Amino acid sequence: MAKIRYFDYAATTAVKEEVVKEMIPYFTESYGNASSIYSLGRKNKKAIEDAREKVARALGADSKEIYFTGCGSESDNLAIKGVVYANREKGDHIITTKIEHPAVLNTCKTLEKEGFAVTYLGVDENGKINLEELKNSITDKTILISIMFANNEIGTIQPITEIGKIAKENGIYFHTDAVQAVGNVKINVKELGIDLLSLSAHKFYGPKGVGALYVSKNVKFNKIQDGGHQERDKRAGTENVPGIVGLGKAIELAYENIDEYNAKLTKLRDLYIEQIEKKIPYVKLNGDREKRLPGNANISFRFVEGESLLLNLDMNGICASSGSACTSGSLDPSHVLLAIGLPHDMAHGSLRITFGEENTEEDVEFLVNILVGIVEKLRNMSPLYEDFVKNNG
Ligand code: PLP
Image (cartoon, rainbow, N blue to C red; front, side):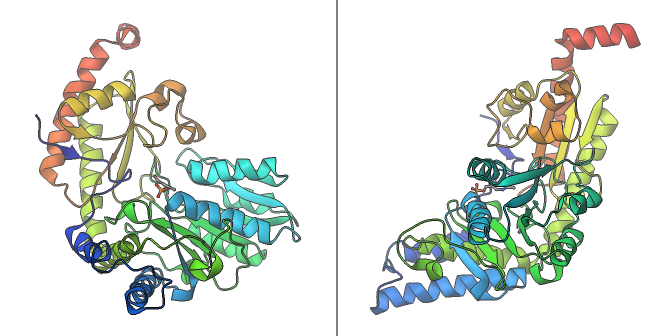
């Protein structure tokens, strides 16, 4: 079997050994319920509070502003529903974008069924929102702006500071889904004017099934799940102590050397893009060339099906993605690629490569060489490509 080469860090990451090491005692020796008053419980409560401190430090927040959840999707649900249910007397209008993750889009769709009004902002060909359009969408009923920090498919980073400013000037809460950004870029919630921020541990070498939500002290929000009084009565359910400890360690490690990590990924990404654009004709980089996540390269290959690319890459031990992991397997073209104006055939021919910790320049070289061969083979089987060559060659 071919050696596995992983280029899908936006889908998930392996848990770092140091993180696993910190988690293990909480599965076995220190298994107490964090709500119990005996020392076995109190020790775990302390471990949760230490992890909360680490998350707060990484984001420039206060630890009282951090709530642990079960995943990034839950953080998005809690942020959006939590704010709009608590502020309904002020208004019923939400502004978001057409390129959000389903955790935000489907939450907004559910809220529309409950009588809330939602504006879905479009984006330009690079995936950026228009700030004037955002300003013009605000009404006296707008209570929440939810705009993602960075897109999971095309990597485009939104103008977060400017959005934060517009939200503040209009007295509207600003939530950002930063699941793809945390651990990849520096974030200071106070400087950026963010009121609520979602994150998920498995995107930055922490465990799956644990997330967090930052909620500024000034925000009025409700719990959305009934049960016990955990997480200061905002998120019921016995705490996932090993998971929370793992999240805390992972975020601490991620921000210890963020500049170095960011530079390493940017270099690999730019090398890959440069090589593909040089060696394969009829390709298009999706997303903003400059303002994008350091490890993300999403490229459409004309006259090629993304699914066929993935299968052929898999035969060579390469893990990658066409669109997001949550939507691959569906035959519909990605909503993000359609929103940036790609025609259906180009949207179907997209390949998302996301770099991370283990990747090297040798991996990039290997990947590019394999892709050159696969794309050539697939194009030679394509009647569309044959016609194109006949008419243009
Ligand atoms: N938001 C974005 C932008 C994501 O990329 C993801 C996961 O891919 C999520 C939310 C959901 O996170 P989780 O898998 O932890 O539910």
